[in-house]
Length: 310
Ligand SMILES: Cc1ncc(COP(=O)(O)O)c(C=O)c1O
Image (tube, helix red, strand yellow):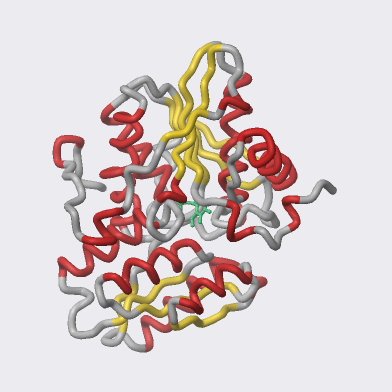
């Protein structure tokens, strides 16, 4: 069980790059407004490494530095589908910690290019086994050399969801002046939904927590998981979301083009999927103030098919 309540929240102190994570802008999505239902997106690419994953990466690093688990020159080891790796690479460099990541070999070239620029030690894993396979390889490396590595394991590390409990949730409540009625977010490690959802359930009990996932095992929504066909992350708590929607890759890609061309927002596929889920929810409401998360920008996905009509 978790041991935090709303009154224990503390603000992130100014600690260089680690202290510049969070406090991202909340943008109204004019395009998706339906009658009296408004939708807002938290623009997470404003974080130092360009995605929402700076929040858990900062929290995991800070917790491990404070507990001494990263002492004695230990290397931070984790698996990633890309963004968490870029967040670790950025923030770990800023505090002088070395990292080793496992990443599915079919991760986008721009992600691999960014990690290469940071000089990150990478082990590429079987593309057919996806993020679950990368996690199994990281666990095996950690078991082989326990003294060399601090195995961060974002799927089971409570600092992942706590980052959102301490930062994303309070920011959203403040940004909306308490007006939020629904929170919509995608499921990857599930840290965003679990942490933000737990915070909002405690601090604003009327808010409905709406999670979404890709509609099948094979999808193009990087960073997200179709839970029924995946290893379910240990930090996932099925009691947090009130409902779980499904989004197709095609609908998300079409939305990504609309957001770019009609709203001026160049976002990644999981953000576009969030807009689809929020928009579907909006059609069913008479009034509402929906907040969703735009996890990253479209800049890392320019080589993908989503920008062309099929
Ligand atoms: C682009 C993107 N969207 C969404 C998510 C899902 O967030 P979470 O891991 O908090 O469930 C991730 C996670 O890596 C991501 O990279």
